[in-house]
Length: 329
Ligand SMILES: Cc1cc2nc3c(=O)[nH]c(=O)nc-3n(C[C@H](O)[C@H](O)[C@H](O)COP(=O)(O)O)c2cc1C
Image (cartoon, rainbow, N blue to C red; front, top):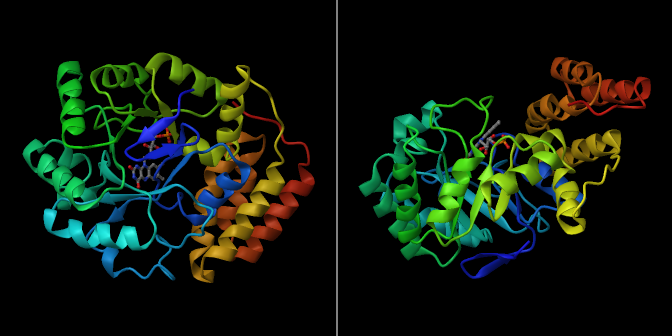
């Protein structure tokens, strides 16, 4: 694979951890960094208007440690007036890139006209991108969906517009604006973006295995991949994909699921205050437990727990009763 160059930065591996609310926090970012293979990390989406007032020592959205690098901060916004303070804060925090969320359809973003709702207002979007570009020398990336309709020309023009506004990386979540995450992603559309622009394009959506990753590279011709849920189901997936890219073959490595679960548990305790840990453990475990047999019983036991200690006891019991976990799917 060629190196991916984003503005003045070179990324060591073309594999990125996606921004995901409640999941792409310091504990998960540290876990995947420790396991290896990821070359780019994203925060979960942050409100550009609230960010300047957040305390990085206590805000679970901002807590991080030095090894989580390179880290891009994802913003959602719909007003130029909030840009300067948000960028200054990200630069103070040592952020290495800015990502603008143009793909999220959540109701809270609809109210503000941010996320996917900003993506359809091109004059406003261009003004916002130019203001971001003017304010910072950090790489500027955008995370987009395919649009409202299957109009390829419209999508390609949109990608060119983003490039012309100074964007350094386009990540395409290969689903249409209203598609649910369970819909099959359209990786072929990433190839349309790739052919249309001269900046790096990453593909996102539906990558849960090394085979998916290799297939996605082949179909999309993307410069890199962004993994969302797949990185929680298998936090070692970056490492396995990176190895396959290097060696040119898929190696079936066996990972110690108990050890990785315990390390994540420990990282939650290290990074977050007591009352911020259990919710994040539950959210993680629901996905993490999908990759092995009987995982649903671990997920249910953790879901029902009232405290971290109870969750840990139940997880210990689960791993004791099920020492040989077989891969699902
Ligand atoms: C729980 C959850 C939270 C998410 N939060 C964000 C977010 O903050 N910003 C964003 O751009 N996308 C967000 N997404 C979308 C993911 O980044 C990604 O585009 C999507 O999950 C498809 O990729 P995947 O199939 O690899 O999971 C979220 C997805 C999930 C499942």
